[in-house]
Amino acid sequence: MQHVVVGVDTRESAPAALVWAVDLAERLDADLDVVHVRPLSPAQIRTMVSTVPGRRACERFLKSEEDAQTRAARMLADRTLAASPVRWRFHVRAGDPATELLAVADSIDAYAIVIGTRHGGAGVALERLLTGSVSHRTIHWTRRPVLVVPTLVDGDEVDE
Image (tube, rainbow, N blue to C red; front, side, top):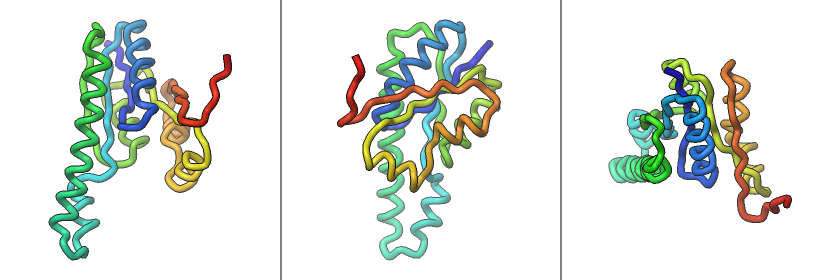
């Protein structure tokens, strides 16, 4: 059985990536592995706030925020895949998104990886400068086909 891996988060690029991944999985008669990567593990959260006054409250806040993002990503997958005949699983990982997407793809010998990317103004450019691009790292770190789905953000124009 073939597998398609798709990265899903709570950003505006996730729905488009998920739709393209479903289409690819249907065409290949493949299983779809939907992967949501939390930026911090519970141990990393505890370490990060260990010296902060009120650390228990900080830890609870960070964990609740990550839980909310995971629920939102799962709800997106549930809504998008509700009418689809594609077999799918939802994975939750913690760490660097590119590293974790590739780890899931390697563990199931995925045929392809689908991820979204954003186009936009100075805010997106600054974010990529500071944190790097998940799509760029994924493309350069794997030997598997990677489908990068562009997504427009406010201010972009559509060519007609």
